[in-house]
Image (cartoon, rainbow, N blue to C red; front, side, top):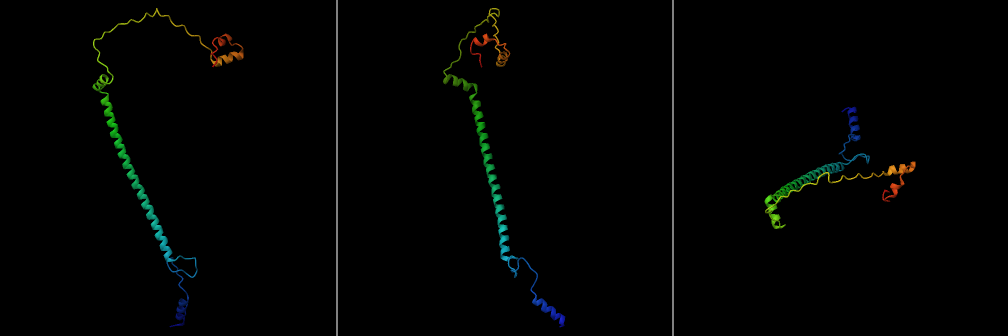
Length: 164
């Protein structure tokens, strides 16, 4: 071996490995690199958090599906009840049911012999036409009349109830 080869070997043997990896053992400089176990624990924690988030979302979607099914069942039940009520209303409005209720519950009886009477309206000339009522001035007209001095005091004192 030559001198240069020996020199190279001694230099590489004396010099520590300069390649640094995150998963390798801690270097001589504390606080600069993470230990492999710490990196593994962080990775497990992140995967666990992502898994929990996925499970929570899946659970929420499943609960919403159950809620939707329950509401659809309630809607169907309400529609059936509505149809039953409509049938009961139609049954109560039938003429035979109305007649039975009128006779039994209200004591009504059918009309026997009936007589129609003719009534004549009174003649239009015989009834006097009503006289138009005297119009009362509005509040604004009375106010304006007092301001201008043209108010009619006799209309205001007649009933005493004209003041609004």
